[in-house]
Length: 130
Image (cartoon, rainbow, N blue to C red; front, side, top):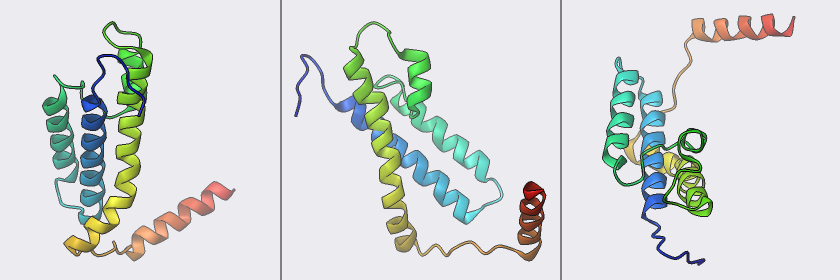
């Protein structure tokens, strides 16, 4: 492991785990499709940001973090890269592999597409081909 003077990996771990939780919540709500899914998802995401605000900033989005924090005093560019790009990206990638396990453990069934939704999708695709 590469060591940087004064660097502790907690920021990358926080960004990674919180990004993982945020993505899992979104995927779970997408499959469950409750009436207030957007509100629940927003509440969870905001709560995760507030929980990590004093620790890592709670950005969970490398591009957003780069736009707002890149070059700020207090951390090197390497530390910034590790926390906001590697940490958050690993959390998002982990969600791809963790969600199927969570889905099976919770017994979530695959979403069924209703006939009218399917017809609308087919009409849209046909329109796009023209």
